[in-house]
Amino acid sequence: MSAAPSLRADLTLVTISFIWGATFVIVKDALNDVSTLLFLSLRFSFAAVLLFAVFRRRLGAPLDRHSLLGGAMCGVFLFLGYAFQTAGLRFTSASRSAFITGLYIVIVPLLAAVLARRLPRALEVAAIAAATGGTVLLTSNAAGFDLNAGDLMT
Image (spheres, rainbow, N blue to C red):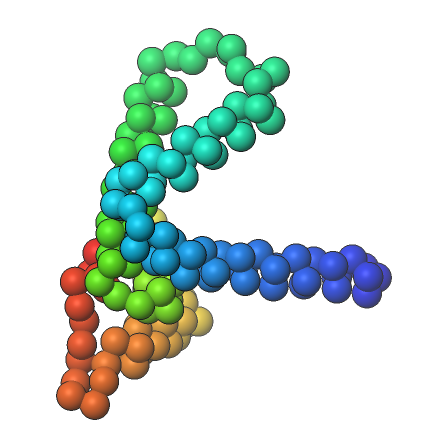
């Protein structure tokens, strides 16, 4: 692999990470003007229109009941996740929300351990400990542990 594609990939990852992190600040600011549900309605209505415009030629394929039920269940959980995370931004800082949201990475090896009935590897345990320790440091202050409602909702 030459240096140019590797550099491009690295710059793309940095750019995407920057955009992802910036959305927390933008959403927190937007919540000063609109309610959580109105914000989410506008955000995902815009996304639906955009996706329809991009994929309209592929639409129309028949969906079976199993696919519709699975999609609906995923949609409900995705909505709940976005609703709680966005509402939580009203009560915590954008940086804390972003950091806590990033902890979903810790859930993967834990779920794998439970579902596959195997113990996590040493590196996974170390990563879980580091991420959990970072969360404790982030949510602590001089007075002690300071987990607020927004942190819990996130």
